[in-house]
Length: 152
Image (cartoon, rainbow, N blue to C red; front, side):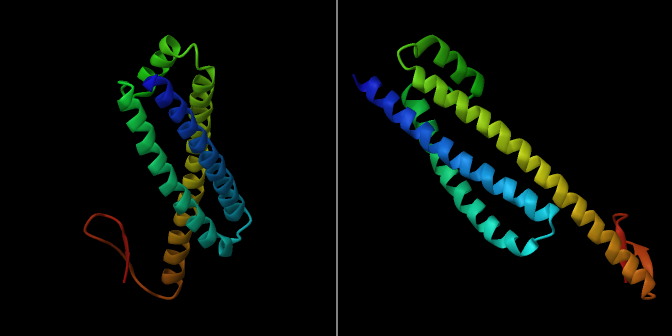
């Protein structure tokens, strides 16, 4: 049956996406180590790897959405979960792959959020250090037209 073929291809697509997300999570963890150990020389390589993985994940996302479209399923997470519960008793590997993918996506999102907080903290620290150094050098600190600190 055509639907069986599409479902099997969909499972393969999800498994590839799972592998890519696992690799992305490892990169995100390495980024945390880079930030916390102040090893910023490693950052460029990590960003390059992360960019490549994100491009591949975007391609997988498009393929996944194509399969969902072929199966007549909305791309909303809730709709997919309902469809899996009601239509895929004969394909438990599909439900498992979907659940694994969603768990990994949530994990990656949380780690990426943490990385964003770390970057934001470093950025704020650098802005304050720059302002302090300019003030110590005798530069006058003013405010710009939008109320932000402005160093002349």
